[in-house]
Image (tube, rainbow, N blue to C red; front, top):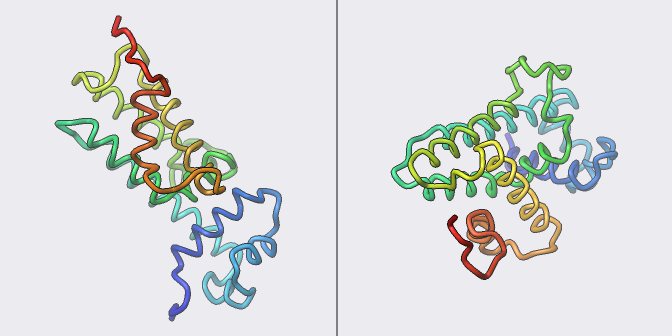
Length: 193
């Protein structure tokens, strides 16, 4: 069946192309991915089937992060590392979601249609993760869990976008994201009060 092209990789390549050229049409994205029209239709069947498979990939990625976020950890820093790694391994999908709101609301914008809409549950799962970590002393109580979620999303999307664009090296970005999120950019320890 598919011997030369891995569907998952091709979907991620399309997500990257859509992030880089949100106004592009299907032909633009096919060219950017580096496949022919015939290969596109052999892999996906139709544009509608492609969109469905892209949405399913988004659903799988966010479901994985939701599952990790909902787990109990003795050490919430380990949980944070797993969440960061899940974002990095699916960086194209995460950037697509965060830079193109079209993919946050799949079914006519109805936020309660959860067939594909995992954006709201994804954010709620991150909120719960940070809330649980705060209750166990893992993260500061100075910020609401929602603020930690927003801070985390901006940090991770900013860093992975820069890495995808070649602005920073991709080597060790998981560790850099963790350090940036946990400690910020200060070279001094802040007063705990």
